[in-house]
Image 1 (cartoon, rainbow, N blue to C red):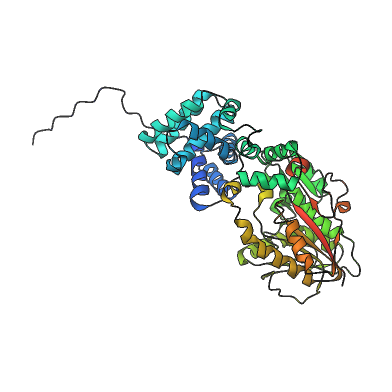
Image 2 (cartoon, rainbow, N blue to C red; image 1 turned 135 degrees about the vertical axis):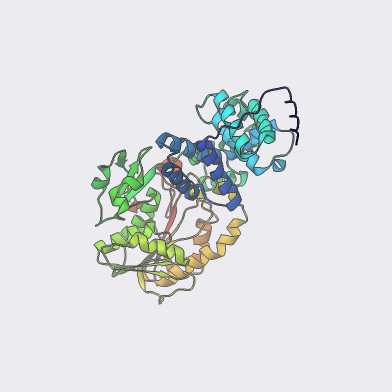
Length: 472
């Protein structure tokens, strides 16, 4: 059988296999998981990084770059989408989501990092060749070369409407928040342009890792002996890890004697524990305890006074997380899986009650940047009945003279003061307690008697707290 003649090669450059970059491939995989599965980056990224380290593909610098690429792209997605839209000849909704992810990673490298422009474009085009194919890589190359012609300030002047013409849309594009979130946060602040811009900018900063030394089990001094550890700002149990600090390397964290907990979350638990009571102080309830950070701190504080803590969480798997957080608590406690709106306890059974209610999470956008793009204004209507129901149940669970803490990791007025005002109309046998004196070191807590923490003022999540005493 005669050999078939070979086809002549077409003139031009010979085919070159795309170069696989493990860092950028991992960042792309994380973004796809966030988009396709509605996953959260803080849950998706750690196992991906761990697998890469175990395979020998990553060192500490690689992990840091992958983390920056993922979180930076998510935080600035709104800004980058506006820039990309100016560089393509079709609506963004007609661009395939994987292509948008590669473009977002590329734009972040160009406009949000110190990576040289030629390297940012080249690396992004190589990534596109690996994960999208040569055809779409050419599209990525064309778009990123247009983006590379200007810096971020220049692009913002072009794509953001002037502040004087449309302040909310201007802030939405410049600070990468949906317009409705900008409006809601502005209403909650009740201030001028300076306050809102500082808050939106703080939402785009990478938050520090904060640890809590659980009383009776660890001390802040022990945690301060760790590398890169500095004291917290407001909580006597808080320690902050500067950039590069790894919680898993801290012995007290591995043993459960300390934990990772935002300082705002710690302050909510401390305010409830320090609120003045009329009568005994023996039984405490955490009515929405998952995943267990506040419950673990409350349990330790209760143990110091010989008080019992009941930690209740509706979802069984989250109740398991609560049990793990409380394991080893020095005082008496119990963890149950129960619906806080259908109490498994008798009315008036507790001296102190905490309900940290499910919410939109608009106060934790630093930690979960994808939440700002996932949430919708109509979500507020979905949370409203549950928030009111949990607060009503908490007021029924506390005895006369006892105190309820209503907390939420959202500053949206529909989830904070509106909920408290509506429920208290139905409970004339209650009084609001001024929560601000219970956190004497923290400034700018609001007009009272409730309090609001802010990322730009306190370096915490935007936790809200109202303390309510049952009077009859």
